[in-house]
Image (cartoon, each protein chain N blue to C red):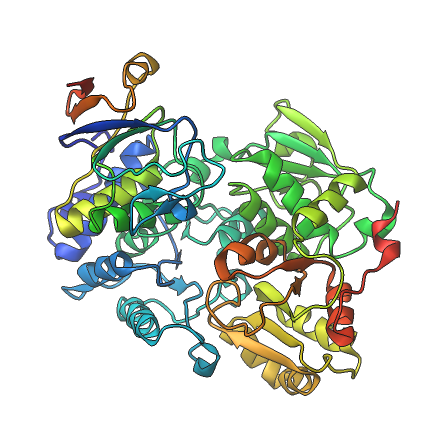
Length: 127
Length: 419
């Protein structure tokens, strides 16, 4: 799902279940088993392999976008219909669009936590 | 967008049947595209779990869909909600949340969904037949539909379930397609001791073993002598909780697995796991967070109890009552509860100290009063309850659960768990 976003990169080394793993009130990762536990996804370009867990992850993503604690965009290694679902529902209901895109390994490897990136219809690149 | 649209799909997308249906079609197509579907297919029914209140977005979404009077196009059942409408006094949570939950439930009824409020829609009289394409949400119901009924649904949930129900369409992808229903990982249980193989408890424990190891793959069980629908329900719900299993095959038992070759679609297994009694005991221990000792409650009926399971609890009680101070719950759908009442089971359960919960379940909403360990025969309940409602849990067989309820402390059946 395309759209345009710009922000600081946050690389998640492992898949995250947003349901139970993200505090939608604060945008903080609260999954104690996750290497980026404690990081905040709000307004970040979140790079991760894929989302783990149940279909309720769609609800968690939509809730976080609605509360303005969600990511600016999500960059994945493989297509994930659950994240697309959460993002499109938030966009349709509230006009808050969070692009969810797939990028190859080389592109993802060029994205470092703390750097700036832009996501648009041509993909993701450093800014 | 690479999904081919039928004329009717295009008409819905263009808003000729209203803005609600156009929204449903846009969401459905975004997901279909992500799943790599070439087209949408017709469904004959849907089961929705979006009726469980999780926050304002779910409510905003269904109210937007319903704003111009949209109705579901296929017969649609509803999963458990946050409230027991038949026994509202059981809810111990925030009244504002209860009001929002009630509004959400009403919104789904307004769409023309049947107020079934059960996670076991396959226990209703009308259920999909072999080969039927449906769109079901709720992980245990998905597994049961695919595996036991031989109906076909992908793993749906929040938001998409209602879009499919409103449009009567689903992405032609995932478990809707025969090639994705091929068994991949074989679990051989033939070496398990007789006592375990003939018990009820082996099914949820085995489901936990399978779900933990299969992830998203389709598992194939070999060596099960026989299984009732209730036992397959326990197996599937446990596998779906511990992993992302959307269907399994049980050779000689489930309809797409008359033989191992058929389950594997003539191919080779990607891996084979020999299930030992050690693995089954490990599953029991992984599903248990409290030591054997005093308990505060027992909870059975996750997924919702069948009439046979309610009868079995009455038989195991054999006229005895739950120990004073111990809470005992049995969750079921309102349809089954009505059958149980007709059969006189509800009075006997109440007399023994069991509370019948309908429309919801004891691990997703505040009903329990105790904070003490809760004993259950459900792997799914044991998997989710500690995080959801903050209780310690002890997993055991239904015999152990009833004996423990009567004793007020954990009673184990040593013969069941030894080699």
